[in-house]
Length: 336
Picture 1: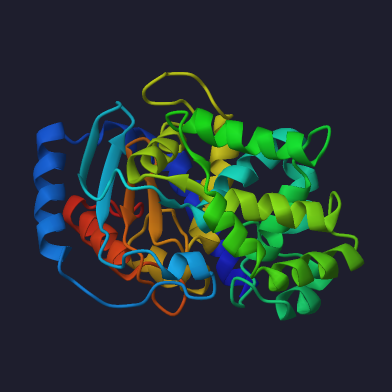
Picture 2: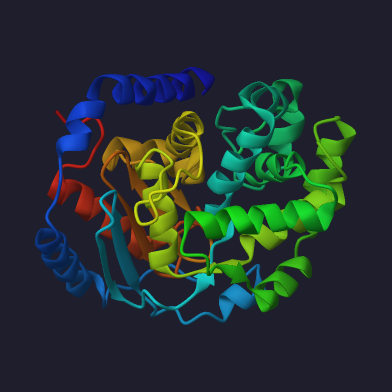
């Protein structure tokens, strides 16, 4: 498992090194994007399958028919269709961005040595993975690793650390993502498993701050509400090597963007990440709120929102849409 994971990450590093120029020159016209997105939306708007996450009560209440798509290019072109203005819980799609902030705060060495980089081979919320892993290392995009990542965010106190996370998310987007209070309360009432994960990590001396405070900040990050447009702006900032495509401000170092995208390849769709990259070839991150963010370096970000999930916790319809877009535009990063 570790050898395969290392190979996938190495392929991605080499890809960025040798194909960055060609990726940067592969542009799409706004009219082309508009037509393709419209056609695909019409094709999939009546597709059904999967079910809402029911272990978080508030997510089970979300209308399963909601469906929105947004694409934001590195040039700042934006194309949205469907329910793209309806806020939804970002859930685990917050993990890559909090990871980026933790890298900024601490550097790569501390984070990689304390948390780990390889896929766990277990489900995203596994306790067994923590106990079985050598030195109890995890991955920043599974629950255990993401709780650890959150524990390394710097700040004067718990509130200050949380405010830094929310401010960073807003700076990546349009300044308007917010904490969904009802989602947060629903998650707090049902996050006993995550508290157990944090306690176990604390017992192994793998946490950077108080474990319960870290779980609380992790839960709040997952409860941030975004639209597909806001999330696509966040992704497009990473596609643009850390520079916001609208404000043109550098939000995060391009060096850390590379780290984040590599982890999205390795574990962005949990245990189905290998099959995803083999088929679709795009760094992506899913969330049980029904969103999937896909980032094509030097080109664009794609966000699809559709609440019903497969057994791995990934939006069924979002996977279908992004797969078709990848095939239509030859977006697979290893496409020659």
